[in-house]
Length: 438
Image (cartoon, rainbow, N blue to C red; front, side):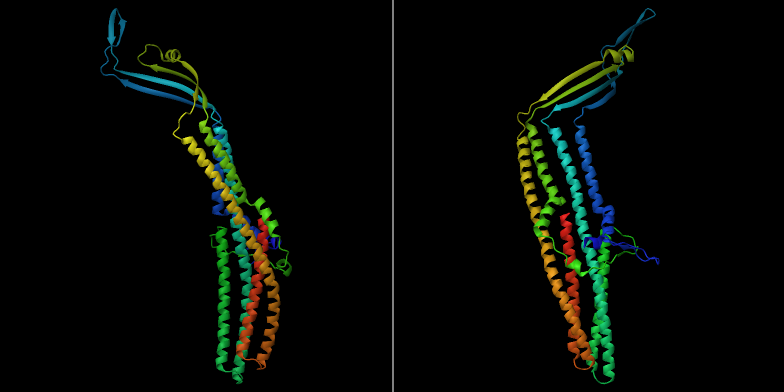
């Protein structure tokens, strides 16, 4: 099934008809263009930015600052005096200017491994974001496969409906001839006409189903333009429907190993462990060192600006130690909540494992059941075809009535539909079992 669905070459006819998309082309196109997947990729990139931001916290911070001020003192009591040409001159500056300049650095040397654990937590979050993207991709791929198989099934159902319609037209025409020669009543002919009309309706309904499934597939591919779209129609053999079904336990074991939702749940537990360590760091002392260079100037000084910068230059180095004593239970609450989150993550893992098993088992049961149905349906179709051919000939000879003919035709169409449905459901479920193995 995998080869049959994915390896079919596409083509565009010389007349410019719609391109025939294979299943693999649909999946690849959706991976590049589906909006949900694009959003999940953005979330992953955002998580990676958080990782880089957390790593930067390991480095010292450095900043430069300056402030420039103009001060007005309306009631200043004294000023400054100068001697010029033998005279003492006094002046009072009510308005003066001041400026300060500084460069400061700070570095957290120890905080109970909070920074390192935050980096680890953000890295796990980034991995989870990537797995979330993989989960979305798998979900979209499953939906595409489902729609693709529905299109293939409905396409064959159209063929059955056309065959049934042609048979109804033949019977109607035969009935008209028999009415003309007096071998059939007009009431019986009306039943044949009604059967032909019903088959026409069934054909229209089958064609509508195909268009609807194609529309849904285009939505998954984000193909909103009005361009024609069609899928490549592979030819399936009995061997593909009768392929050996993978063992349930084997599929589930491999799904546990490969499925992104399970990996994501395991990472959530690991993230919870790191969150507990981060919360416990609230009890640890914090050690930091700092250093700075600063100077200032003012217009109140009679020194030059450059000299004043040099004279007022200061260098400072310091260390800080912060020891938590009472924090209003914040650390204990944070630790307890982190532990509860871990318990929730464990339950989430169990729930996903249970859902995964239920999903795999459902596919396995459906594959097994429909494969058995297909074996029986093939025999039933062959029997109904032979029976209907005999009924048609007997009806032509006047040995069977209209009710028996119509009943035989209905039984044949139903057998053909059952065979198609069981065939494609078997192929689909076997494919999905293999899909969950990788």
